[in-house]
Image (cartoon, rainbow, N blue to C red; front, top):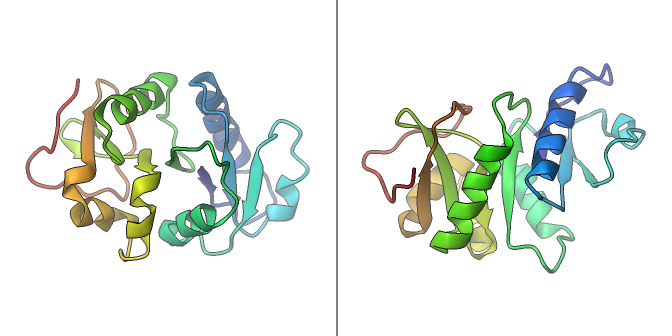
Length: 175
């Protein structure tokens, strides 16, 4: 799931979104949802994106967009959603693979990357936490509502730190 906050049809969001789609595909993420802002009609014309486009006008609050995706028609075979707010310039295949490996090996349902002691994006939410999304006021409070489901994946490369506050202590560590 890529949150593309494109307020105009000028295409300024497109390079970042395209890079993120390419990175996710290279990490073998098969079902990609592009959540679009006001210029959603322009997105239907993009030949390089073959995934699902979800028009959504409330991108200022990512939790609402996540709830819309979860309530929508997700493939029956999906196990969770990887939330990638756009732009996310530091997203790399190795970050995505580390998060996915953490998800599969730990059986935790909230996977958060950590770089230099700070939490960041993208985050991975397993389907078993979808019911908690209705009870939290923001994505940032999801970890506090289900601390037993959190796995912090400690990365060697920089990530975006916007919007995911650090919490005292480390839930589980992985290098």
